[in-house]
Length: 637
Image (cartoon, rainbow, N blue to C red; front, side, top):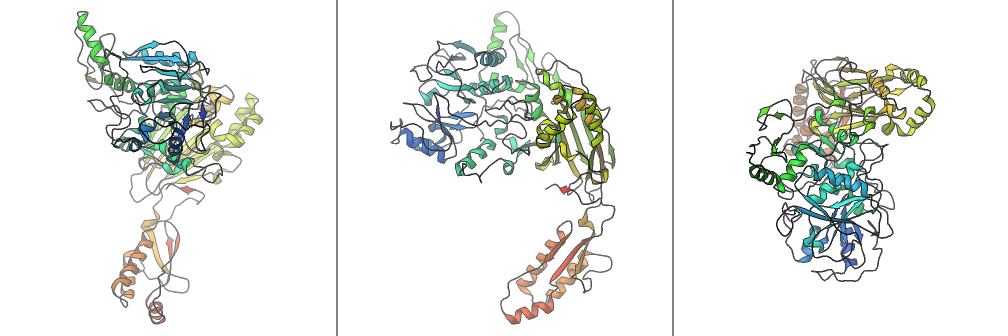
């Protein structure tokens, strides 16, 4: 389900589940209706099935006289799909989300029946808009049935569109399991992006980040999920439920095409970067290539819907290009042979993806994922110095975006790769407080602006992600980290452990003033300075505690120090000496400033005496690197 609160950057996909007058929904507690009916195909009652689903971390939807349904965020499953062993089925890789679960009528034509639930008030206009976006780009026929209750009996599959306070859907045609109309919910907080996303599920599409090969392109940071396990209202089931949002499908569980499809960062079915995170907006879904990270927010914030690849995959499964090609021949035309994930469209021409053009998509033309309009500031850095954002492509023009509010957004990406492998990246970021003050005074809203930023600077200001994108280790800072009354010398400094650092900024500061120029101006005034100090590991000293002499030679060689330790420990020999050397070398290899004490269990008093004579018990590791900036920073993991 997709939260469409306009105050949020990434539009978190998890809404609070509430009970509507008709639907009995209780995510993690006891069943809210007495239901002793035996579930078909098992010896369990509906209530017992519901309890098992909760124990496995699913939310539960219950109707009177119907089987309970499992809820996994915005996706709804039947019990047979998530607990097949209870019904005599063998759990297999393709048991869920079979690519054959398409909507076909008795004649084998792509067709979907739908109607509106008379017991709830769905946003019909919004659902129709979402339906139209798919109808215009596929060969699927959508047939409207008479409205009625979702629980009415049927012998043919169909979708009952209701409003259960959520944006939710099943994936594909589930009539085999439901034996009735399957439910699709368009809640009051849904917007077009969310409605089209849910209808994409209903037609058979799974989440983009659920692809079986997704780990090649993105990292899912499970440790950043909002767990709230300390709350009395939350349970282990809630923990499991949250982690389900980052699961990866197995090969064969999702729709696949005969031609490999690139990972689609702009897909309608892709979650935002911080969905399911706490209010600190930590990144859950990180792209391995930082140049594409902004796209996770760009699509939904801009109101962009189906991409070429969304349409390509769904049309391939429903065999739409073959049907359109047959229509071309019937009309006397010869359909083109489309290449590079292009396909024959309704107009008997090739629909080509970005990066290809020509009558058959045969000509390479640019990138598969070109830099988008409001993300032109894409800077690669390899040398120390000031990073200037002004004049790099930011603008305030309204280029007819699907959502008008998108004019307030700006995206900045800085990818840093030092030239010397012995250095690490250090970045100082500073925004003078009087800069914002002088500008907002002109707008007459400075007090209300900074009062709101006091507690909402992430959602009203801008997000600053930094770290190592290739490893998925990205941290989050917000507006108040940079705009304050502190002097420049106290500005935050961000340091990586090596010469690599990625920075991605998402800003919409001007939305508070209805003035797009403020977002652009504040970003341009950011003072970003990059330096590459020597890594401490290259200049460590191994020393005895105060009062003793250095173990290593005058050249600070850790190799000589290790040799000296090895000689000193040889009096014990065997395993003890090996362990001692290993522990010492582990301390030597640790970066930064640290105090290390080698401890071991004494077997007896005599051995302890020998150990005291043979070993240096306490070591101090000092960094002799020069030119480092003040240690007011937090390093990236």
